[in-house]
Amino acid sequence: MIKITINELLIWVRRGSTVIQACEAAGVKIPRFCYHDKLLIAGNCRMCLVEVANSPKPQASCALPFLPNMRIFTNTALVQKAQESVMEFLLLHHPLDCPVCDQGGECELQEQSFNYGSDRGRFFFFKKSLGDTFWGSLIKTVLRRCIVCTRCVRYTSLIGGSDIIGTSNRGGHSEIGMFKENALKTETSGGVIELCPVCWSGFIFS
Image (tube, rainbow, N blue to C red):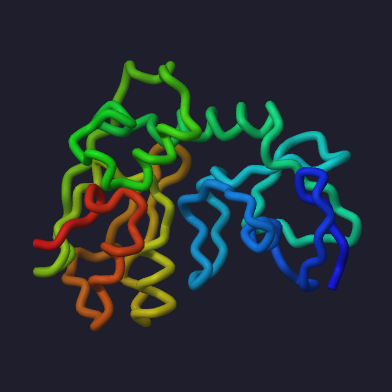
């Protein structure tokens, strides 16, 4: 066990824990999209940023291991501004106004946009439009709302044992898809619907 400080609260955590795991153990809520405790760490949504003492910029808590006597802050103005900016980028190509859209609260993205996002966005001149692809008879994709958290990619690879799903392109042009159009035939393919943070937006039962 090692001693660390979260929001000036002194706690002991198991050696090897990440910051987001220790915050959960301490009852401190940190927003996240790509992180899931049953999947491999990706660290690509950047929503779980925290401030570390003596560090010049916020860091992703899901991929940050604890060091002895580390001091973490999750509620400072720097963290709030960083999370607000990240949410603005995640909604860059989103086709609807968030948090007010047709999901009516049944969307993790909508909830976190309401709690951590801004009341206005600066990127409204260009919206990337993606066509829906065929993933099989169980899943219907709505990729226009995808935020590329890669949960479905890691789940299909780790749990389903198939590497048929992946990401293509980089930056704002990244998108989720299959390298070769085919049906997702793993026995656990329906799990991507449960894991999707914009479900029932990203994936729905056909």
